[in-house]
Image (tube, rainbow, N blue to C red; front, side):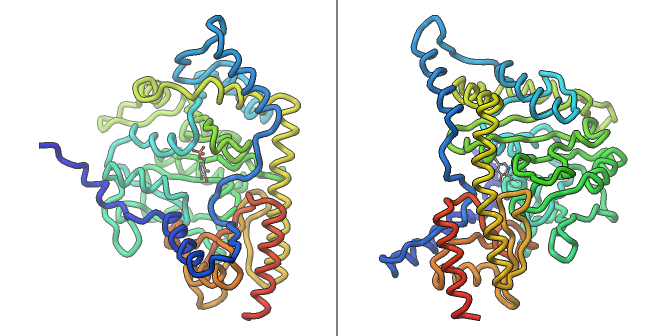
Length: 413
Ligand SMILES: *Cc1c(COP(=O)(O)O)cnc(C)c1O
């Protein structure tokens, strides 16, 4: 008799964005003439840049002849891409990595979800709250999160990030945490971590033998020079952290699929007997077994973002989104809202008016201004009383949405 992995049954059936889609559809049925603008889901809207398109055309032509056809590539990724990453994302910031510390993937979601396979099911897990749901759900699936009580998993340590603590998670003083997920610049709050604060986490991890999973998917949106782009800018981080990167938001690869994960060779994790096991060869073994590499065309496309033209073009698109972010922060603040993020990240995190829950505000905005946001509580208990707006829309839609919000605010409040 085949038995189900019962941990899957603990997952809530309703995925946040499915809930949102249902409510938006219900609104559209009632108001078929209304044009709803979505500033909700975190997908990009601008096309791939010309350098990427040209690289893909070239790669496609190579695939067309037997002399230059590419079949299975290396599971770790092609050297041409790993070299470009090494030089541009790390060496340029004074970080020295070896080629075999870089693992190309088909996007950061897979690896942030999969990497926890390498550690025992009974490690404790700490997350900043609110949080990208993949971190917790992937731990639920193997039984590490425990059971859900009052919106919280009982084996997960939640570190609240709210306006009250300046969105700086407090290091758990009363409890040892085996594994910690950090995401900076942060989805959903759009806030960042300073080098000083990040150093505290690295020191905590080294002292307590804690493994840090650092998600740097939004690193390209950092505008302030003092904010770290990689956890390896902090001394000692190679001994305690895995880092995840993605080309999805950086260069519009959400539909193309490519990213990479850094697993330093110095990084080790203990066995019950106290023996130290390096994670790099273990991850390599895992990938060789379960992953056959990102496509050749995707990897050539990713390589192109590191060319001189590619860099300029990618930056132009990021600037385009950040102009939206800037406008949103400006207008929403002018309307009297309490607004965070939007400076080093494409997300705006906004406190809802007093006494209004995330979902109440979501519905009020949908029906009053025909604009879709994401209810903050969908990202975790500390997200209650906030909503997220994304800067990934077009200028036109963003401006139109802001105009509607302004009009609605003046009628309502
Ligand atoms: C979008 C996003 C990613 C990237 O996912 P891909 O699988 O690379 O598209 C990773 N982490 C966070 C927090 C994200 O928001």
